[in-house]
Image 1 (cartoon, rainbow, N blue to C red):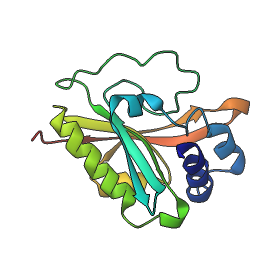
Image 2 (spheres, rainbow, N blue to C red):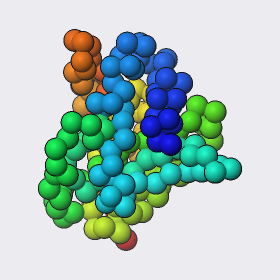
Image 3 (cartoon, rainbow, N blue to C red):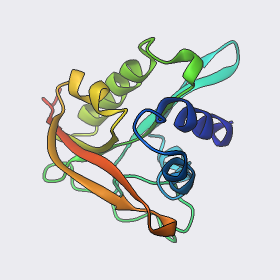
Length: 166
């Protein structure tokens, strides 16, 4: 079901910021399922009437973004006392956008991150996602471009937030 939701979300919610070529090139390497989050138990889904309408998670591993296609290992664990946790892989069905689904998943991630002993979180936001994270007090660290197949680039924003540990 995530393989269906992600392209719908990308094509429906990213089109004001990215070209069709950028979105299609980013599906898979940037916008894709990362099964390691599921195996780690750090991925959340929102359902309505048995349909997944949103998803997102956090990671205790170094990868900042991207699906798991082409990744060979799970990566080492981050050190909660020194490293920021990663907010990862947020997608909302376009028909359910702007209803607080992303915000609720973000709050669930932050609670789990605190419970795991992390003191901060960071993420790489799309241009469409930046306002969500900014509304949750994430600050811009840097703007950069991810290189995509076909010589394309995808502008993104690295953001961070200090978390009070419970």
